[in-house]
Length: 308
Image 1 (cartoon, rainbow, N blue to C red):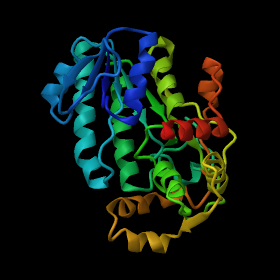
Image 2 (image 1 turned 180 degrees about the vertical axis):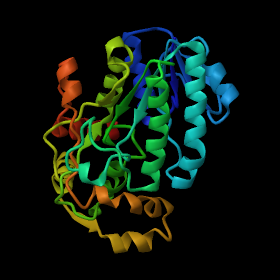
Image 3 (image 1 turned 30 degrees about the vertical axis):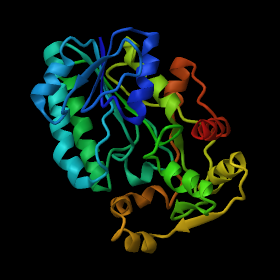
Image 4 (image 1 turned 60 degrees about the vertical axis):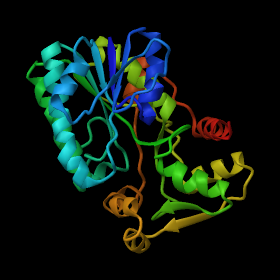
């Protein structure tokens, strides 16, 4: 049995499809899980309830923690440590391997221009501090030999069926409406994005590769990183539109954040947009001979799927 915690999310739903290459016993866990494959087992659960988490994990060989919480530092600080503690305890009790799908918020601000699995851990944001805390909880149990686990890290997302993606919200949707695409701070800085189908496929590969455990992995991401402006140009081309870019400076975010809560929460992350942001996944690519989807192919596929 392979179990996905947070099965209704962007990664969880695609991951469920990918896991059919390895098993026909897949358990989907969320508040209101929906079948992705005909043989899926649905397990409704509140993942903030430790007792429910324990029951959801019972009988699992591999557990994938791909939960996405509301994008608020306060919510993350309150809920993430409890969820991680419950998942760790249940995996240890039931001898299940754990795959934790993580982001890059815990890396030092100086590492953003070239992030690897060895980059310094020194978060500069409240959300980053939470990610550091929960990753360390996992690493501590792993190093103590209590469970087999791995951390799979991704850059920011783009791809089909990804409504929460920054690129979907302010690039694709704006172009579709005939408006200028927005970008934070500086559209001429490079910014890596991980294609969600690649992220899900790679997560399934890692979960089913025994010697991948007890390590941190960066999920495959095209090394030919584009600037924000170049990515917007790709979307505009695929959507038969003229390229129009409207950068959002920090002072504007401060004003809009009063009226748009998510922008208020984004302000502490702006250091990821005022400099080049490069995500290095060469470790995974070499180990598994995996070629990430190019931005050109990924944007074309995303736009085609969004039309369908």
